[in-house]
Image (tube, rainbow, N blue to C red; front, side, top):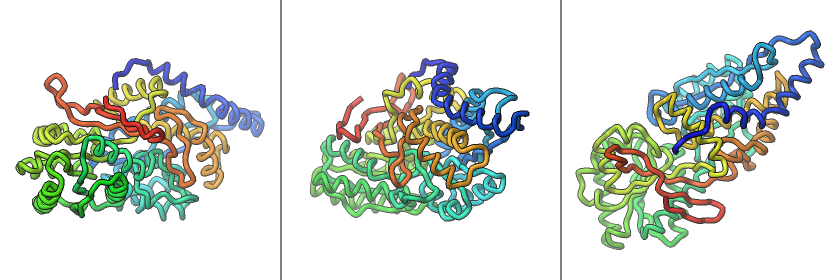
Length: 420
């Protein structure tokens, strides 16, 4: 993403979306207390993996949330504003139990809306607590279809896993792949992606072998790679090496998995395809061995894509995040920015002290009319993002430096695959 638009330009654009709600709140506050009520502080919580697995997204999500709150408060004005927003961000380390403890701490501080957590495993652990304790969760990156439940307190600003399965299957099929061996981390999100991809690739007429699942705490991938090699040999015997691929649904532990797989000449000779949990990962770029293997096997990773019609919004925002973190943000991180704006507008639409039911209704309504950095944020009946294309990112050498490069886009509505 090459970036050029200024911060002030972005603030003006975002501000226009905010004007009616801000004026409505200001008018109501003045009517209720002509002398001018004190500013009310609203805490927006964030649950991100800042030091654990998938910390690339955690760090860019933190920056996106902080920037969004700064922009919201700047638009609302200075000392005379009736409502001010603050961030309270906690590190989950991508651990479900840690995420629950941090969510409880944020709720005790008065937070009604938490942005995050990142993974479906964390979200599944938090769901019961959120539903029972008047807490809205807005995940930027959870995709598990098992969490697509209407009427609960969980919202997701990314499409569910079924659409990603269609996208990656379309790319594999277009590449001439006719048999895949899936490998996946045992957690709700990656297991959901494996199921979705298995179903979509099978529907195209492809062959999907049993595959290899590994535990979320796995550090030594020797057994995983041995089992994978046996199934790849089986697929090659049936289809030929050029028509066989490995589909990998994982997080940053791919670095350790690649270290094992790189020594196997057969696994290094077939193509590999990835998932949203690794797209734009700094952990991969930080390992020379992982970079070499990723380039050798192709390894495009799909992720919820950026809307070209929103380029004037996401380009300057991405630049601001990159300046703050020195990391290239993906669409998940930019969705955090949009989620904060929708949350803030929901408070403005309901007044300073809404019930959770009022806040939930306002959030759905506001999301349905918001056009932000990631485009339209319309939600479906389950509270998940209704629309979304997918970009594919792969590691390539750019002027002698390994970079994540966008290599393709899958347009969900049209079913069109565009090579970059």
